[in-house]
Length: 432
Image 1 (cartoon, rainbow, N blue to C red):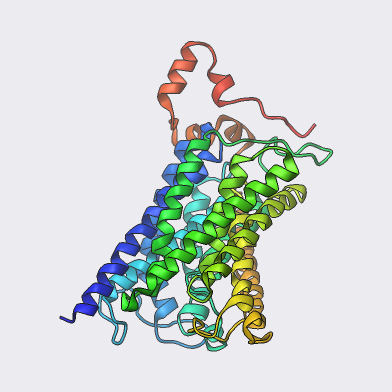
Image 2: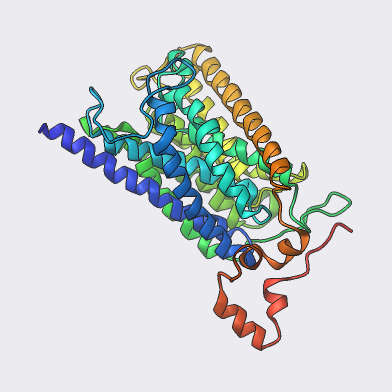
């Protein structure tokens, strides 16, 4: 067997494993960013929904994205059987697993908008629907030879396909589910429902940062010329710039070096560089990441003022940064690196590529939001609501949905000391 075929397959297999391990990063991110009484629920539902997403990708997702069809959708290769694709240059089964991992990440991002208030059944049903109706069409349009690919849309590893799609689904969910109890007062001011573990969130960012090398560099799907190394460097530089920018802007605006904002800056830089990592020079990667770190700070504050309760900042980290990252290639893509589409504005390409990027952002963003919103509205009517009761939300989803806490030893210890309610069920500040 050809050595290059084997090396490509091995590289993408390693990358697929790194991307799947990012699910662990998201477990820690979402758990650490929310309250202790929901920790076990969040961890468990993330594994469960990734399992559902995996099966759905096998049944229909892969075929809808990469199957033979038309410019809107694929119509073949359902129930993928592990065959090799002619001309792909690596194992078809490895490529399938790699793409499955991307679908799972987008689904996980979408569920950020459900956090701390949705019924477990809402996760299960939407995981199926998102994996069939929301994610595959957008992925086909850009990565499966669809109409945006024909226009030269640049999205190397998924700022639009994965991140913006997931964020817009989360946006629809936050609107329909409404804010958590105690998040906003009658005068519109917001209460800080702080996450219970910043160490978890910091560790999650490190795990996601490492996993992103599989996400971006693995998207080369080839070891040819070791180009994956260049993509990895751009990825790392953008993340570092995002951290620094978010730290500086929060320090200036708040008078304190805000740790959660610094962590969000890292993720924003990673999301932003995901579209452009193979198309821009290293200095541009730093600029893209730095701007993303600033944007995420103001985006989080904007959504909070708009009374959009987004516990893990999915709309800002994956939505706002995803939009900027997609548009950035329209400015910074170089003639030498633009293997898809045309060079950006700053390299003599004019406004053409920027226009294509903007078109892709608008169409994909609107599609993901509207379809998700309609699906969730239908689910709400059919399931007698998507949100747990007020009592269940105050008790916490660990107990109300699963009958056990994520931290049972702490519950027992504090219960014996008469402090159980104060620790795990603090009285929320109601809208008074």
